[in-house]
Structures are given as C-alpha cells and as structure tokens.
Amino acid sequence: METPKIFESEYRFCLLLWEHEPIASGELAKLCKEKLGWSKTTTYTVIKRLSERGVVQNKDTVVTALITKEQAQKAEMDELFEKRFESSLPAFLAAFARGKKLSEDEIAQIRKIIDR
Image (cartoon, rainbow, N blue to C red; front, side, top):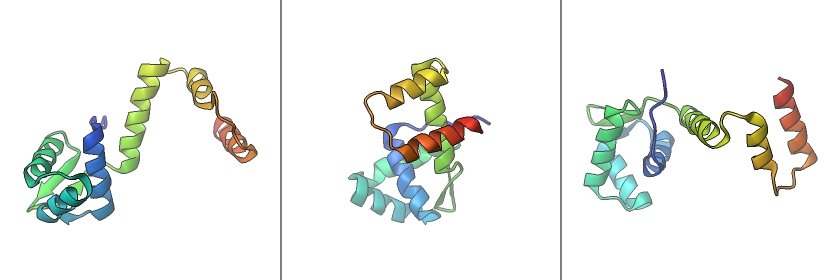
C-alpha cells in the first residue's frame, strides 16, 4: 500500500499526533491551538481530511495515526528522490554532499549503508 501524501502543515500536525497519540480530538484541538496557532475548526478539518486519505483514524473522538512517522518520511524522501534526482542515487549523494564537510564518522556510516 502506498503511503498517502502529507503536506507540510499536515506534517506539523502529525508530529504532534505521533508524540501524543492516542489523544481525544478535543485535546488535540487545544494542542494545535497552543503549538500551531490553529482554531478548533481548522484542526477538525485537518483530522477529517487526513482520515479520508487514510493517514489518521478518528474513532469515538480518539485520534490515532494509521501511518508511522518513518513511513511518512520515507514516502517524502522517495518522492523527492524520484522527482528531483530522477531516481539517481549518485546524483542525490552528490547534491547532498556538495558544500558540506562530512566527518570521518559520517563517511564511515555512509560507506556501511552502501556496502549493505
């Protein structure tokens, strides 16, 4: 199953959800007001939209995520990798490393990943 697209503001919402789930929708609305400056209506709209796309579940006013943070991050990286780097790992790594000074430890970690 393909991970649904999560847009930037929705991702910030999901970060709060992942940290506090399961959470009552009313408590989540208060948290979103405090952390994101959202109105209760905005929060409920996002919950509904993400529920329709299969990202979250709102059952008996308790909200839980249906995908993990790691799944969302991987889907975002896959999309970036495909769109911007035409699925070319060398192009991605070159762009990533350009202008950065990598430590010996970072280089060793990258080598381990490549060797696997």
